[in-house]
Length: 115
Image (cartoon, rainbow, N blue to C red; front, side, top):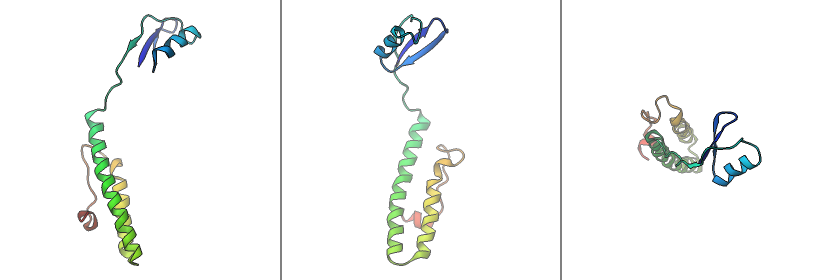
C-alpha cells in the first residue's frame, strides 16, 4: 500500500500501487505529495486466526452432517433428518454467538457428537 499526503485537504490518501498514487497527483485528484511509502498490509489478528480455525472445524462438521441428513432422508427417516437439520442450523449459527471466537458453545447433540 502506498500513501500520499494531500497538502490541500491535509489528509493522507492510500493507494494499492505507487503508479496509482502518482497518477492521482498528475490527474489532479490530490494536490501534490510529500512522499510515497510502501506500507505492509496488516496480517490477520490472533482473533481472526482463531475464528478461521473454528469456522474450519464447524465447516467440517457441516459437511459430515449434510451426508448424515442425506442418508436419513434416503432411508425414509424424516424424524432423524429433522433433528439433524436443527443441528445443522445450530452449527451455522456458531459464528453469531456472543463471545465468538474466544467463547464457543458447540451445539449439544448426540448426532454431532458422533461426527
